[in-house]
Image (cartoon, rainbow, N blue to C red; front, side, top):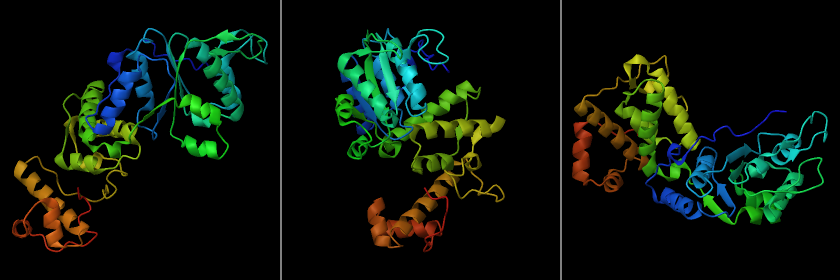
Length: 339
């Protein structure tokens, strides 16, 4: 049986980076600060890739239990018959292959924090055993008759709608209320646009240093495309995309549109020669204005009065720009690289 013990006990608070200036993320940071010294169970909800485990680690390493272990396990990644023995441990001879006594992950988290991700994927029998841990602060290894005390702070997380799981009878209501004494709702990246550029620049520096490319530049159109994308995979998808770009840009050290993933820049085709990107300020500015005005006009079905009002120009100023940049009445499908 694979040993799923956590290997990152050398981690400290300094290794945990939580970046964000948006109001939604500041509320998350405030809750972390309020909860870090308490032993109250915490439930973290949010879409996949929003950084739920990082928030759990921040609560642990910034609080009084930082000297203990942070033990993390993904409840949805392990079959229930294996997960029970990993969580609660077993006695020698409890089943075929149990050649020695083995403590469970919850027991090993005593003095520290136990983090159970995807708690919504647990089967009903395991939910009952987990409830007992939360109520009695003790566990019983498989094959033993005595209970063992545990002193672990419990944090759980899921991207499932637990209210719906309870209403469908797939999740115990009593466990639901035990877990959700305090809830941290992590906003998706699309709801914190103020944080996107901050995260982008952080990952560019971080992964650039890691792969030996400390000076990599993203062209203006690449930055516009990244900032306009909605990031359904959230921060994890952003991290992966930045790493991909840094690898594909080669020794030139300049990330261009062709280096972006097809899902982020779906109109790019390797067989077609895209419009050359430039670092000339005036050319880049003119290109941006053309694409910005084209998108604004399409959004208002070429109604110039509504377009001017939305973007903060007078009608005369808008007409002057349209004439200057030779913009007619763009169709709905024009300008695939709009911001």
